Image 1 (cartoon, rainbow, N blue to C red):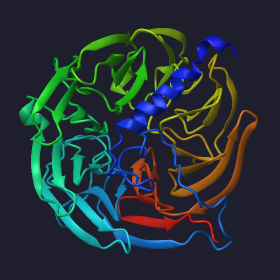
Image 2: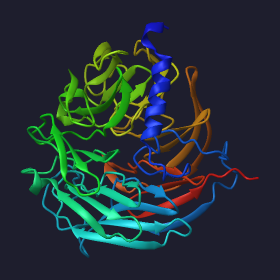
Image 3: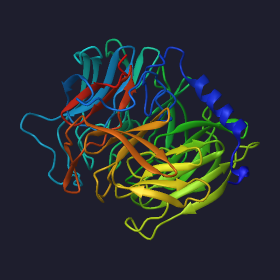
Length: 455
C-alpha cells in the first residue's frame, strides 16, 4: 500500500472536528440525523448482540405509517419520521416512473419510543408530482429541541421537537422559483452545522443554500445546478482537510469543496452523473474522498494536507450499467474500512474493492435479494468488528466484511417489502440504531426491534 495515500494525523483531526460539531445535547445512544450521530454510518453503542437468538430478535412495537423512503431519527425517547397520506380510495400510479399530479399530504410524526404511540403529528397539503411518489425521502434532523424536515416536494420545516409547533418554514418551489420538483424529489438529507442548516435546493447560484437554523433566514447561496434533477440527490458532509473545515457537495456535474461558513468554493472536480444520479453520500477516509455513481462508476480524490485543494487518485468507469467496473452505487452509501471499500453495485451485488486501485477483491448477491436485480440494495452500518445490513427485502443481516470475503453471522426478517421497483417489491429505507434497538419502516408501518445483548 502506498503510504502517500494516507494521513493518520488528518484522520485524528477529522474525528475531533466532527465530534466538536455535534451538539452537546445529543445522547450517545441517539440517532439524530442521516447515518447517525457523526453522519458516518457507524453505530458505537455497547451491549449489542453478536448474532440473533434462535427465536429471532424481540419486536418492541409496530406502528401504522403511510408511504415514504424517509428513515427515522431517535432522540431523547422520541422517534421522528415522515410519511405521505393519500385521500381515501386513492393509490399511487402502477408505473412508478410516471410523473403526474396527485392530491396528497405529508406528515411529520413524533412517536413515544416506549410503545410507538403517536405523541404529536404535523400534517400539511403536499400535491405530489415526482417519479417514485411513495413519500418523503429525507431523515429528520433533531438538535437543541427542534426538528428539521424536508419533504419530497421541497417543504422545509423547523418544528418544536416537544410539540410539533412550526417555528419557520420554506417551500423551495415558491421561494426559489423552481418550475418543478426534481424528478425523484428532494432526497438530499439536510445538514446542521453550527447555526446553519445546509440544503441542496437547485438553480443558478442556489444549488446549495445555508439557512439560519433559528429563523430560516438565508445566510448564503452557492453553485449552479439546474435542470430536471436540480442539485441531485446526494447528502452533504463536513470534513477537515487542508487546514480548513470543508463542506462537500456532490451534484450532477461535479464534486465540490466549500467553506461552510460563507459558501466560498475551494475546489471543484467535474464528475457528471448520467440522469442526474448523484445519490450516495461521499465518504471520507483519512485524506481520501470517495464518490460512486450508478451509471458513471467511481472516483477517488486525495485531499491536500496544507491547502483546501484535491488531486485525482483514480477513476473507474464500466461499459454500461450492467458491465460495471469498481463500484456503481445508487441508493446505498458505501463504506471504507481500513484499506477496502464495501458497497452495493448497480444490480445489487455487494462488492469489496482495493482502496488504492479500485480493483475488485470479491462480490456476492447474498446480502441483497440473492440475485441480480436493478437497483438492488442493502444499507451498511458498521458496529465494532462486524456490520448490520438492512436489505431491500426487509431482512436485517449481521455479517463480517473482510478482504477475504462476506461472512454472514445471522439474518432476521423485520418488515415486508412494499414499494414497487422493476417488477419486485422493496424496502428502500435507511434504518436508525439507538438505545440498543433498530428502527425501520416500509410504506405501512414502522417497527422497533431490540438488538440488546442478553445479560
